[in-house]
Image (cartoon, rainbow, N blue to C red):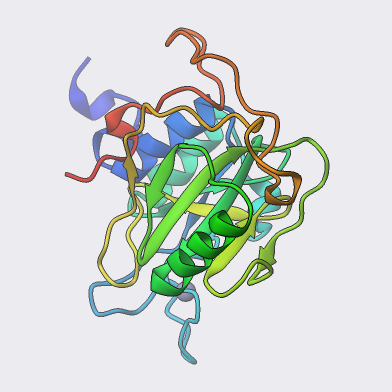
Length: 223
Ligand SMILES: [Zn+2]
């Protein structure tokens, strides 16, 4: 088939689109976000300035319209190949994410771990100024929280989402998975207040990806 007649897919031209399809295959609902512009602005082009550059949905119903459907995801990234990608957290994806922001967040995390228990090694993503730690959702409602555990540490749970690799941050940094084969942490070593969830079984075979499946480097490695 001549190239001109091939169906358009975002994978060939869009790294975030390819990643979005892979997250959707893991069962993580995704949605397209606006994109930081090289001049530091946002693709939404709000006249009064955007306070969430590259971090807010391009679609009207936001995370309520997030999808795992392959065709829907392709449609979005064919329309917006440069869109940042978000993954929904909470029971819909089975993800609970601790968002550690900057030096203040790292200090809060050290203090919490010293006072309670160290968090287990888990899948981790580099963000614009910190990192996301992914845990299995415990199954009961866990709301988003900001600063509840201390400065610079937020929780993304039900009703939330994270910006995911290889999205671009307003600073120009690119979100990237660190050691993407590390499974999402089991929760048995977590204390209740950390809400780390029930843990995940052994990594599945590549033929049957699940939310705990290792990510391929193509999903989010910075190149
Ligand atoms: Zn914007």
